[in-house]
Image (cartoon, rainbow, N blue to C red; front, side):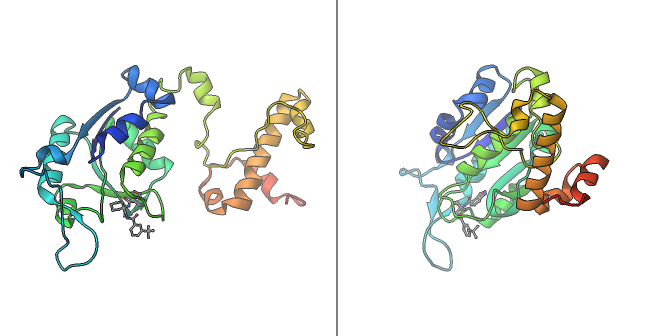
Length: 243
Ligand code: 4FN
């Protein structure tokens, strides 16, 4: 999987992606990261990449020249990649988008700073605008990192042994996780659900599924509507006494 990122903070991207599962995938060459800093295409002696907004008001806007040159450079390196601008105006990112972009094999992400980018760069070069959610960020890099993490995990081999990747297939059915427990068996007076200590693997699998179903219904009913449910799941959810 090849990622291109247009960013004024390439060192922020490199530092964050050098750890854990993604860091290892980078070392193995399973994912590749190509960065383009608009500042490298600035032409004046101060290497300016921002300017005051037409119409006045607070803050600065990323100027079109250096930013579009950085994006064009990434498009040249990754000719089949869709160009995605991370912004609060975008459609909210989800696991289905992660899956589609992983299948595509390459992706160019554009991270904004200041008040954002000149709208004409979006019109000219961006295929899709995508948001992580409704909160204020200081830069699109934090969204780009999240999206790179989510996609990298889907690249075959990145999670190691494919059988464990299959068992560890969260997100696949669209349900929230069941609760997890590990040692000690008594933590500050809190025990562990007895079924998990029973050794009855079928009963454990059934309990976990039912916990995932009730938690999803109680906390994220929006996810339950889109979830991949079996006939048995539906029988359980509609059975009397299921709170
Ligand atoms: N954010 C809001 C309203 C107005 C502005 C912002 C905001 C970084 C360049 C965009 C934020 C959140 C999720 C990118 C937020 C995201 C960003 C994201 C982002 C600097 C301009 C800015 C109503 C959402 C609170 C700053 C709401 N997903 N502006 O955060 O890039 O991708």
